[in-house]
Length: 276
Image (cartoon, rainbow, N blue to C red):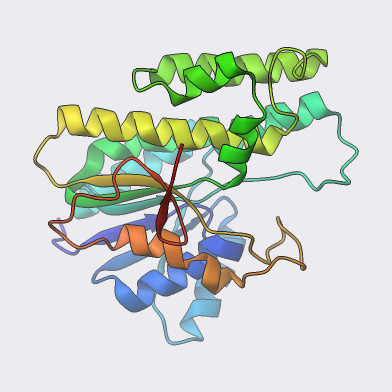
């Protein structure tokens, strides 16, 4: 079993994910795994970084496929005996002009952004070594979507005692209501991406709380973050940041020095905590 430290980035073959891998290759002392659903695209991304003089490694990962997640888990356990840094970056968003029915958009978006992130976390968080770092890439769209939800939903999403099961049921309810076309009258914000990222932010708060209870004193830090508005396939060419600029906050959280205890369980943007 290798004593080398190891970092994994989900959705690492393009956009912010690729920029995060690039930055980690320059700063992280250890092996950096670029993961992607499509091995061909993943290997091409690795070559791109090789041409820049960097040496990421590749492992296939489809966050919507439980078998793919377990394969990565077993590989990390066997080769490294665990994991030092996990950045849950993989996510999707429909374009504003997309004609896909809203209910379908809600279902597809939730499946990747919330369910996929939760499934990866449930398999890989137990592997996180002492002083490990976990970063869930959320979005500033999550607090703005939260503000557009009913007071009752806001209260539930801000609760310090909400469980992962309760959160998952709320995410399922949003998809149901969206498919029936009644999500707004039932108090939801009219954004599938925004509600899915509420899920990621609240999931991060829950995970941080659980780590504090179950692995107290191990120095593990988990946060959610917003990379900002980044020029990617997802956000389009008019966004204000380059992917490398978008990688700054996620990488800052991934490389928080040993011994620090904050930020913890927060949503962080531009390296600053955003009130939830």
